Structure formats: structure tokens, C-alpha cells
Length: 454
Length: 178
Image 1 (cartoon, rainbow over the protein chains, first blue to last red):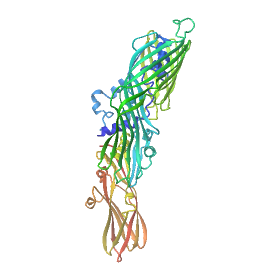
Image 2: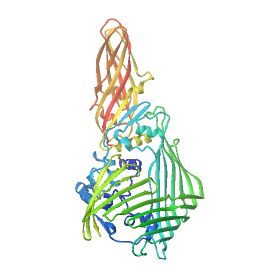
Image 3: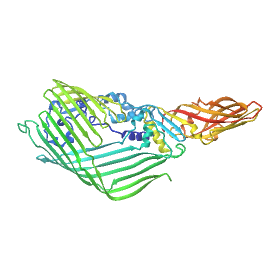
Image 4: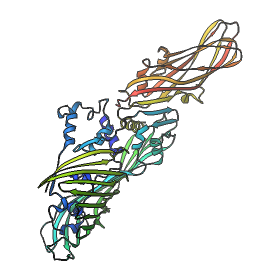
């Protein structure tokens, strides 16, 4: 039971502003050292920008490795502190232990210990003080008040689990992708937020609720895409990558299934606050697809311009992606205090509904100077906040030093720096970066190490 | 209540190794109900007592927690003596039900305060209840009986009333929810 409560707590609290994970999804210490920036051709923006698919893959582009292999020093350290054979008794994983801290566990989940934590994410362990009276109930959460979000909190993502380009000619490709989209948003009402965030008293005959809106959908999308080089630089097509590249894709979405829930959940206090049972409040609507193969069109577009050492690109995905579900069931779930029962009411069945995929965009630029200097920046928005990265690398013979800054989804500034050594086809990179875990306003710092193969 | 308790427990659970501290305003359950007043009439050369009993609701879900301490941090009463000379003391009894407060030993006894003639005398009620009533503060409901015990060694009737003006109990729990 306790585990259930803790799990609920974790979900409730940390669905919260999920930190910008753009950099954290990479295992490249070079990228961490540059503040998480993706350097166009040798970065990961081709996932978002179809124009980059027409740019030739060139190895060793100003120090870009073919592959980066992470050195999981953090994992080694973690396993030393938390031996696998003793996980069952480990306070970190044992909710019955007095040392169990759900926030520390959540930090572990949101910041997997692949790399070595120089400064671990802080986990509040303060006392919580409650004042209880006949008509008063005050919760002073102390430092933990920072965990209570001011605005809507949640998480969402659109993934292309599989993106198979398929055969093609003259820049055209026919393929198929498997998409997965989820978005969960929750908003505390003003009363509940004041109680949790400002230690305001729970009042008699008042409503305290969380409004939730959760959507999940998945399906496949046969895709026709084009990527090509519009112009060439001086000297012809093969002398350099210079030119303007265009890319686009049209998706015919075939939704396999979706579900959406929306509504408040909470309670209404009685008089007095303590001594009368609050009435649970639940009045939610659930939409579910009865049949698969919702249909809809959407598209991607991208452009990239490369001129000598300079490149800039912009890509946008899932433009106008609206799925029409022909057969949907709409149900209403309500709690009735009389009889302590939950009722399910069929509002409508076999009705059409529509869902949308959020638009994702990325803009990037990089300049690779002949002096061994590379400067880059990118802006990414995948539906839940904009992430900005700016980074620079300077190479001196076999050495490289790097630095960068980023602004994460929660608008916190983060910093990265690092360096590298390269001997022939092999390199060793180290990158340090700060990040703010979901459940803290403070920064943690992690050291990433990776071996690069050129 | 379950929803409220669940919300509370979520907050407690989120705070890791911290302790849960409850300031229970017992007086708020009495104020305006008349239960904050204990009239007394003590005939000459006798002792007598009068009580008020009340129910206090506490958050559920802390049955498995361990109680670090239970203290009355703020407690005040006024003895509004109408006449006579004697002494009035207070005792507090805690139990899981109303009847139990009459059989439980006193958790706290405040030394008698002398009263004489028409006067108002302030009495401080503070003390450490740790180890005496710990288990009761892990339950959802608690009953408290406040007894005023008077002695009249004089030849005239001692009468008046004791009026509670504040009673705040601070309970510190080592969280072990459920």
C-alpha cells in the first residue's frame, strides 16, 4: 500500500516539468562538454530535419567521431554503493526503510547513473509540519514546497520508434514509421496550490482538486519523403557539401489506438474540516478508440544551407497532423458520495473524434573555422517547452577544449565544459554539465566520459 | 477523509527522511461549544472535581509510525473565581474513547493554583506527554478529558469556572506511513 502511495506521489510530483533531456539522451561526452548542442551534420538534428538526409555523411568532420562509446563510470560507482545482491535491503529501493527517500529514487530514474555524478541531485529531507484544528489544516512542506509546480506540469513526447526510409530514387523515398505520442498535463487548482505551496490552511466547504488531461496515441505512417540538394557550391557537387538542401515528407497516419482522459480529481471539505469526511471529487471523461486505423495527413519539412564552414538548418515535424478516429467511445466517470460508488456512464459510442500530434521543430547553426574552432547552437521544441543549446570547441593538435550553455525546458540556465584527447583514430573525451532534476530547483553536476572512434 | 489523508501522506512521503510534525490545536475543538469551560462549586472542607471531554480527529495513516515526542507547547486557562478561598488544579487524560478517559491514568497534572475571592487567575498548562500517550496519537481519533480538581479548606463555598483559552499539542512522528 505504501508503495502505491509513494508511486502516486512520484507520478504526481514528478510528472512535473521534465527537465530538458536533449543533451542527456546522448552518450557523447563531447556534446555534453559543449552544453548539449547538436552540431548539424554530425549531430542528431537529421532526426528532425529531413533536408539533412541529403547531406553526405563525411567522417572526421572537424573532429566529429564516427561513433562514441560511453564509459559508464557512474554505473560502476552506483553498483559499488548499491550492490545488486543487496538491492532488496537497499534503503534507496526499500520503501519500508526509514532511509527511503522517494525523491532520491525519482532523481535516479530521471538522471540514470550512466555517468559519474560530481554533485548529486539534492533530495529534500526536511521535516513537514502540520497544524490541525477543528477548522484548520495547514501543511508546511518546508523545502519540499519547491516541488509543487506553479503552473501546469506534465510530460509529453512524440517518438518515432521506428523510421524505415525504404527504397527510393532521385531523392525520393517511400517508407514507414511507427509513431508514439503521449502527453500528460496536470494543473493544481488555486486552492490546492496555496495549501501545498504557501502553507495556507485547508478551509471548510472548499474544493481542492487537480485537473488532468492525458492523451496517448500510437500508430504507423506510410511516408513519402524527399531530400535533395537544391544548389551546389563552386567547384561542383563532390568538392564540398556547400549548397542549399531541402527535405520534406508526407505521412499518411494510420492510428492504431488512442485514449484520452480529462477532468478533475480531488475532494470537497466539510464543516468542520476535521471531524467531517471530505467528499471525493471525480468527474472525468474518457475517450477511447473502438477501432484502429484512424487516418490523417501530416508532413515534415526542412531546409539546410551549408556554405564552407558555416551551416544552418531548420526542420519541423508533424505539420497539420490531425488523426480522425471514426469510432470512439466516450465515457464519464463520476464518484458519488451517496453509496460511496463510482459510476460509469456511456456518454456516446461509435462517434468520430479527432486528435493532433504536436509540432516539433529544431533550428540549428554551426560554424567550423579553419583554426580548429567549432561554434554551434540549436533550438528544439518537441511540444513541451523550448530548449536552447550553444557550444564551442577549440582543438589544438591532439587536444580539445569545450564549453557551452543551455536553457532547459524549465527555463533554467545550465552549463557544460570539457576536453578531449585524440590519438589517430581513437579519442577520449570528458564533459561536465549541470542539470536540474525534475524534483529540484538546484543544479546537479555530472561528468561524462566516452571513447570516440574516428 | 481518505482523499485528504492520501494528499497528506503523499506530502509526507515526498519528504524522505524528514519527520512529520503535527501541531494539534485541541482548543479549537472546544471553542464555542461550551466545552472549554469547567464550572466548579466546592463546598467547605471538601475536595471536588469536574471534567470536560472532547473528541479530537487526527489524520489517518500513521499507525505504523513511531512517535518521537508529544508535548503540550501552548496551554492556558483562566480561573474565574467567583468567591471563596481554595485551590484548583488541572489534570489531562487521554484515551481512544470517551469512557477510557475516566479509567486512564492522568497523562499530565498541573499543580494546584490558589484562588481567593472574586478574581481571575491565569494558569499555564504545559508538559511533556512523551511515552505516556504516544500510541494514541497514531490513531485517527483521540479523546481528551480535562479535569479541574478543587480543594476547599475554608468555611465558605468556593465557586467559579475554569476557562481554557489555549491548548496546542505538538506531536513529532518518525514517518512510517501505512
